[in-house]
Structure formats: structure tokens, C-alpha cells
Amino acid sequence: MTAPIAIIGAGIAGLSAAHVLNTAGHEVHLFEKSRGSGGRMASKRSDVGSLDLGAQYFTARDRRFIDAVNQWRAKGCVAEWDPALYQYRAGALTPSQDEQPRWVGTPRMSAITRAMVGDLPVSFGCRITEAFRGPQHWSLQDAEGHNHGPFSHVIIAIPAPQATPLLATAPKLAAVAAGVVMDPTWSAALAFKTPLETRVEGCFVQEGELDWFARNRCKPGREADYDTWVLHGTSAWSRAHLDASKEQVIEQLHGAFAEIIGCAVPEPAFTLAHRWLYARPAQSHQWGALADADLGIYACGDWCGTGRVEGAWLSGFDAASRLLDHLQ
Ligand SMILES: Cc1cc2nc3c(=O)[nH]c(=O)nc-3n(C[C@H](O)[C@H](O)[C@H](O)COP(=O)(O)OP(=O)(O)OC[C@H]3O[C@@H](n4cnc5c(N)ncnc54)[C@H](O)[C@@H]3O)c2cc1C
Ligand SMILES: NC(=O)C1=CN([C@@H]2O[C@H](COP(=O)(O)OP(=O)(O)OC[C@H]3O[C@@H](n4cnc5c(N)ncnc54)[C@H](OP(=O)(O)O)[C@@H]3O)[C@@H](O)[C@H]2O)CC=C1
Image (tube, rainbow, N blue to C red; front, side, top):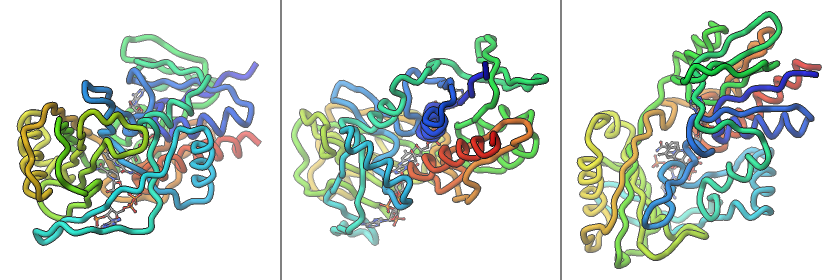
């Protein structure tokens, strides 16, 4: 019997790879350090409903990804989001509608990876710390010292700085991953009992602390008891405030939002902040995925491509396709 393929990371890249391999008849096993799937597409359940603190929406430009999005739409876990878009630049907030289709998971962003997991075997709450290559097979060690294996191949689908130590057996791949810089993003959520008197539903911000903010509850399927907003700091601001307290971050981003939004902003009934240490690669790459076919180890994730949801999905697809090619 052939040993299964190990996939480390149950974000969209790891699950995209798992789907390709599973469809081709291969047994896979996923390892995920968190309690649920999704990674940076996860949603936070809170007293004011679930909040998309990471990815806000995604676009689909590649035909293969468009096909996947259409399948998710048919299953009901994705819907189009057509917000009233604005931009803020040179001190002015102006409408900035465009024709670009934008997609979100429904009823929350995490619904997509939840559907992708389906019946696949996943070990949740299991952080892999080492990957060893024996004479024939791979084995993995987790943070509690447990061993997992044997596996025929390993796909590492986690952010580059976290992937680097797991690629120690393949020094060339490790060196490439080590050279990838990933920028942080501070995310804050505010919830108001009384809706803010504004038409804005999403805003690209081109100056100051903020990069983007959106009215979370206007996305399809979201709970609507509170008027919920998600605010993202720029990479530069987030890096400069990496060690700030959550209270300081909420205060500053709330203040910046109140300056821009152009209506009265009362004290929020609920707030939270989340720091994404490895939010996005500082620059795009065109690697697709990294592979050492002789060893049977692969690395993928948004950092191998465009640094977005589509890029992560395509990278997982590419890693799995290369593995299948190498098996032939
Ligand atoms: C604040 C923010 C806003 C964003 N906005 C958008 C947007 O609007 N549109 C867009 O297209 N993209 C956006 N992105 C980017 C998008 O979310 C990512 O490109 C994409 O989700 C990355 O997917 P991934 O599978 O490569 O990585 P991840 O989602 O990071 O998945 C990796 C998974 O591996 C797990 N893991 C890590 N280390 C280990 C380990 N050692 N062992 C086991 N498991 C491990 C993690 O818990 C995680 O679940 C945003 C990202 C952030 C942070
Ligand atoms: N914060 C993070 O860590 C992080 C944020 N990411 C953001 O994800 C979206 C997705 O990018 P994508 O290319 O899929 O979407 P768009 O085509 O909607 O946006 C791309 C950039 O183009 C500018 N833009 C697009 N539409 C408009 C508009 N109607 N009015 C004004 N500007 C628009 C905008 O860039 P600038 O603010 O002008 O620099 C968009 O950012 C995207 O927002 C990323 O920033 C991805 C990964 C991590």
C-alpha cells in the first residue's frame, strides 16, 4: 500500500493541493496548527457575529480559479459582493465604483475552506515543527513531540518564514523561502448599536494609518444586529506598531476611521484587534510553487505568487500538479 501525502497547513493553498491530489485518487492527510481551517481566510466568531478579520474579498482572473469559484457558488459557500466603494486620498472621501466582480465566502469567509475540507482527514491543533526524510518515506514531528508518518511526499503550505525551518532537508528550497519578506497587518473591528449615517461599504485608503475599511455586515449572509466594521492598518503602520497593545491599536485605527468616514462616530459597543504577523509578501513572485521532486517535498502558498487568495489557490494547484507530473 502506498503511504499518504502529508500537507502542512489547511489554508486555501493546502486545501487546493489536497483537492487536486484527492481527485486524482491519492490519499492525503492535512496538519493544521489552529482549531479550524482557513488561515488568513478565517473568520472570528464574536458577540456581534462573525467578522472577516483577514481576507476581505477576492477577485478571480485565472480561468482555473474562476471555475473553482463557480463550483463554490453552486454549493452556496461563495457569493458576489458589490459594495458601495469609496476611496480616500488627498483628504477627500469620494465614490470609486468599478466593474470588478468581487467574491466573499457566505455566511462568512471561512465557509469556503470549511467546504473544501469536507471529509478530508485533518489533524487540527497540530503544529508541525520538523519534517524528516528516511530511506523511503517522510515523517513529521509536532510541537508536542509526537511523530506522524510514514508519508510518500510532503507539501508545506504555510507562510514562507514558517516554512523555512520545515524545509531544512531541502536547503535550496529553504534558501528561497528564507529570502521572502512578509509584511504584517493590524486588523481592528468596531461594532455600533446604531448604524453609522454613511453610504460607504468599502474604502481604499491611500494615506495615513489605514489601508482599507469595510462594513462587514453588508456582505451577503452576515448577521445584522450591529453595524460592524473591519479596519486594516497599512503594512508600514502595522510594522511600526508591531508591539503596540491591542487597546492602542484600536484607539488609533478608530481615530483614523472617524477622521475619514465623514459622519458622527459614537463609542463602539464592541471592539477587537488581531495582529497578522505574516499578512502578505512584500512583493509578488512568479514561482507557482517550489519543488524538489527527487526528495518529494514541495512548498506553496500566496508568497509563491501574487500574495492574494487567488494566488494562494493557484500555488496549491501548482504544487499538486507538479507532484502528479513527477509520479508519472
Ligand atoms: C489582513 C489581511 C487582509 C487580506 N485581504 C485580502 C483580500 O481582501 N483579498 C485577497 O485576495 N487576499 C487578501 N489577503 C491575503 C489572503 O488572505 C492570503 O493570500 C491567503 O489567504 C493565503 O493563503 P495560504 O493558504 O497561502 O496561507 P494561510 O492562509 O496563512 O494558511 C496557512 C495555514 O497553515 C497553518 N500553519 C502555519 N504553520 C503551521 C505549522 N507549522 N503546522 C501546521 N499548520 C501550520 C496556519 O494556521 C494556516 O491555517 C489578506 C490577508 C490578510 C492577513
Ligand atoms: N492587508 C493585507 O494584509 C492584504 C490585503 N490585500 C488586499 O486584498 C485586496 C485584493 O486585491 P485584488 O487585486 O484581488 O483586488 P482589487 O482589484 O479590488 O484591488 C487591487 C488594488 O487596486 C486598487 N483598487 C481596486 N479597485 C479600486 C477602486 N474601485 N478604487 C480605488 N482603488 C481601487 C487598490 O489599490 P490602492 O489602494 O489603490 O493601492 C486595491 O488594493 C486588495 O485590496 C489588497 O490590498 C491582499 C493581501 C494582503
